[in-house]
Image (cartoon, rainbow, N blue to C red; front, side, top):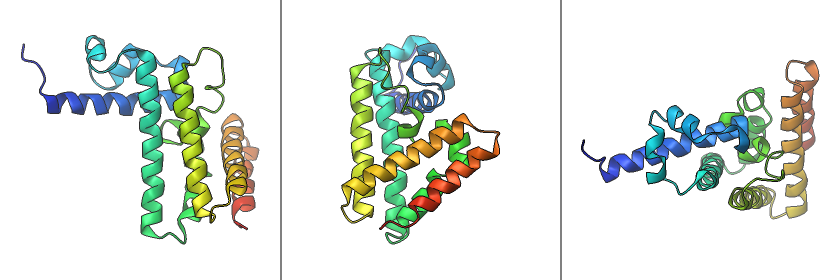
Length: 188
């Protein structure tokens, strides 16, 4: 049987990372298995170690992929119109779509309760912290380099999404999102 080309290997690697990032955001690091990720990517588990040293390596790279996706989306908003980027980002972040689809959403909110638990690999936690710092930096730049306010914004955003997810199905869920959006609407 012929070996996959370098290009095909890269395609497979990206597919694995995309699916792992989605599954980790949906189920947390402990809820993800190598066979599950490989199946979601349409590949057999036997090829896993051609791409990653370990499950922890996969999880750290998946976290990085999710962070890159979020950063790319925000950069796209800034490129379209820097004056409205923050408001459009808040509208998306504090939406029922983000609440209802953590696998496509922000890893900061999706993994906030998971990465602080014992047993999470240092590489996963370290990448998460790097991603949080990156997001604070981006929010700070959108606010004119006001880091304390950006920290409070991020805490409000993540807290609202976590509470909205925990109360989904009850009217209070949407009220959490709306209240956070209203509180954050004025960046001053």
